[in-house]
Image (cartoon, rainbow, N blue to C red; front, side, top):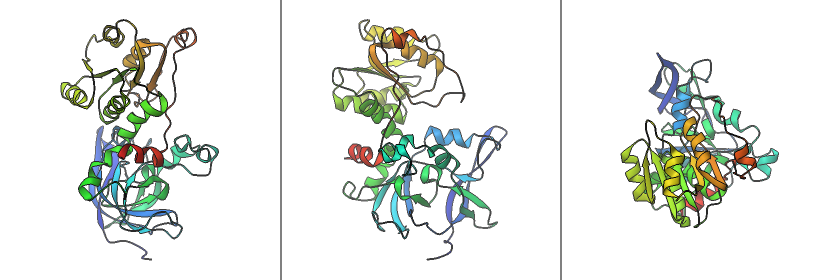
Length: 336
């Protein structure tokens, strides 16, 4: 096995300059593949809000330089000595992975992995090196670091889609499924346990929100309300299954608007993808008695504290569930 690779391009994240994200397209090499790893040629990758968030971290908060990206799609070019489930030339989608050995991973819940945060967000030093200076660059962000022509991937982060895609064009279309779409659809199907009788409200119609709307439509939910500040996004939401759209902005009261749509009953499922504290607070108020409120958006700012009257959960039994998904099962399900 070669001790290094030929140079290729990667989008390397450096500490922000004057508050601005600092991403540089650079020539890099990679280290040899490990026993439980794959080398993947990336053909497409989504850009998630989480990537933007971590690229915005100060030098004291983040690990730099590093390659971000966690919505990759590509073809395997090399497998580690301990890999038996994959082989070269197979198409894969890249999602997240857990350690595989802790109690939560063993129970089939890798998203609750006890070491997941450090493994995913910190990555690993020296996965890449700059071609000219030989400076080490962190990789394996979320187990993959997909902002590169070639990347090293933990085998647990890869989902084999050989039976689902015909060619590279097909594979490109699936890249965004593995994070944004999976998160939104999984929130409705796995967490809120959506049904056709439900009235569903989704605040924020980016990739996560649109995934949730598609899932609610597939389940046959009777009312699907999309909320956003952008008319163009609401138009997309309507095309994908929203029965109602609400344009938010100054003086917008989500609960009041939801009560109008639902004849005063409130929504049985409210999903927040925005991280906006006013929308979260109003979303909880808009949730009907016995309904489910699900939050998946990054709060702004990180560390923001939320105030919700506790009686809403005690007296009227509103539920605040936690997201849960296993990509090896769920990604294949939604892709097919």
